[in-house]
Length: 235
Image (cartoon, rainbow, N blue to C red; front, top):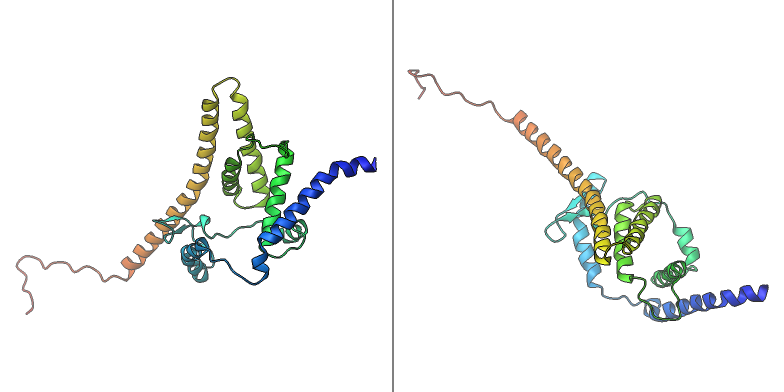
């Protein structure tokens, strides 16, 4: 029995070792103190600077930022969250490796686990799993779950049910129609969730403008009435 268990576990152990070796070799310059010049990180710091300054002044991040393109919701750049701290669990899963090796190794390990759960044969090339769709769906899941552990899990089940339902409908309808209906439902959910944040920002902005207008009207001098007809005006 022990030999059978070891035989079944051997391919997974080899895969984990390969991930570890590749992660260390690929990220070896980071261990030497070298830093990659990342243009996207510089752009992120520039776009998020306004949000950081707003938090320093008001104690919380804004819902809208004008530093990203022509203006975007600030949750795409910098936003407070109430997620559960998973630092110890991440350290255990990444074997306590330093950054960025731990991220590389953990990404490989998570993708391998996902493919095993989906039942994809690791020994052959397969297009059954739309990897690009999985990546973009992860962004939508994080948005719908508000970057919280419980919310992300529930949102993941919701999107999985929608995608699975689309595949089931493809047996009764054309695959394009079934996939289109599923995509419309997912897009509507994302639009409503993102629209809520925009509406909250618009309401807060309207309140600030009304408060500013009331302050100006309270401090403004009373209007001067014109003199009545025939009255003498002082020189």
